[in-house]
Figure (tube, rainbow, N blue to C red):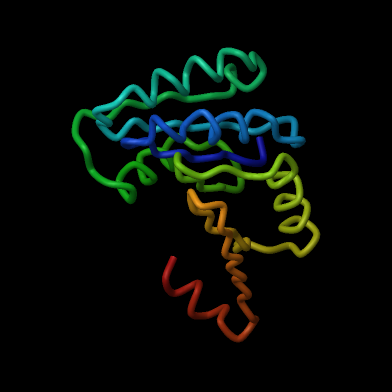
Length: 150
């Protein structure tokens, strides 16, 4: 398996459906999904599980992890990374979503460039339907800085 998608879950029940459906509808066929319930007080993990059951091929490639105590995003990601089988890791917050071809485009790009890390652009959207585009370009001159901080 080339790719694992890590999704920590904490207090995101209102957003989890859009997040999980965006992952399930990816054009990339074979990838692993790792959901980490970071002791969320809401029903987000159960809701995510129910949605994934609607996509049997995605459900069978999903690992569900429930933590005993809340450790925050870094800890949830660390736990997920220990279970990841993918050569590459994509991290997605459970209140975010991605376009249907996002994983395929990212994987194609990272393979064609023989890269170790891919930093993608993103949008910030608000309830008022206002969108802000954030471009994240990393030049080769920043390569050493990135490697030092991994």
